[in-house]
Image (cartoon, rainbow, N blue to C red; front, top):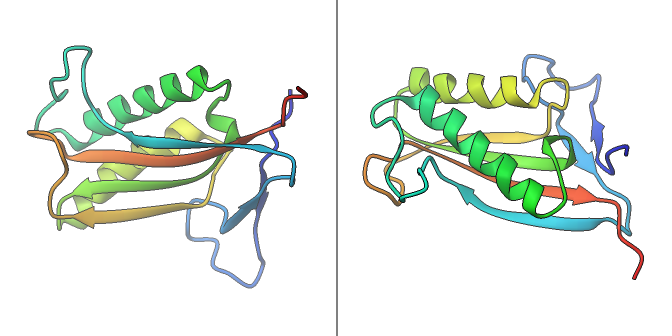
Length: 138
């Protein structure tokens, strides 16, 4: 099934950013708002303390599982916000590269933020997302 998400680009805006600048979904789309995906194992322990890339990968895995539970995939995501507990641009880029690779050609509008702290012990990365899928007839 084709994604309900339509990515929008503008020739007036820089193509340096590795994502579309906007996205839309049809008015009858069902929106899915995901909680922040965290790098936690099944026991609630933080995966890969100190490793930005590994935690980003764990967050993508968590997000993929949450999307599947809602009947969606990564190609249904309409926007993301990637939170990285660091003031170092290199750390933000390490996390971003993993997220960007996971989305491939579906380069959704995204915001990458450095934050002071996240909610779990040793947590360095969290990903928020919104997805849109075709509405299901009742």
